[in-house]
Length: 255
Image (cartoon, rainbow, N blue to C red; front, side, top):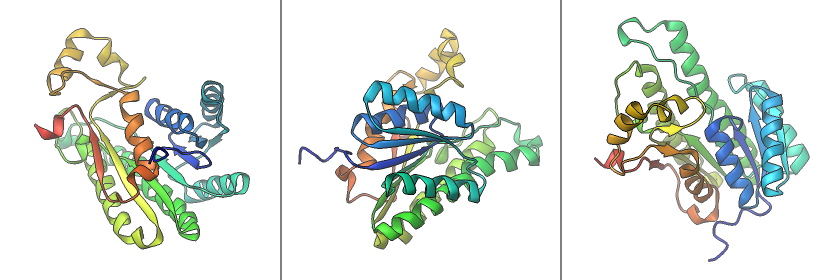
């Protein structure tokens, strides 16, 4: 029982791993023993994060560049991971973009871009990882959803909310389809998390107070708040769980 959260010997790919949330999740997996591949669009950024994680945790890491909207790019990357490490146990799809536009005038090109990364990218990464895991008869996939996948929101978020709703259904449907193959597919659904892209909210006391007031626990989430949930979903501690989204939101979706 004491080894339920142990990831020793596991191989994990974190797509979007050079971003604020992705880096935190990759660091958490490495801390619990996994060999971690940091995957992001820019290889140099991925390598820097991988080196940082290795220095902090002592884990074996690798930084790679990948375009999650290009199936061949993802296929080549994951095959290289298997070639180097011999297997793929965990895939975390933490990449994502948000383009805020008024719904009356949402440009189609912006709509397509946000869906390309958040939805197509997630499905491509799931599909490619899933085929590898099917051959192994075991694996865990963790997608990044959001409270906005089940709750509408103002401020030009029609595209973002729609993509996270799609991630919700990708997660549930693949979980059902792939359960017999030994592949578990779950998701993490955060509320607002402070990252380099949202740091301006934390730095503005009035704005921070407004966002915190919408959370029953009375504060804004930090990237480290998501780490335990990711380790849980990647480990044997959640071995009989699939198709679920765990909302890490300070009670927001309960209110």
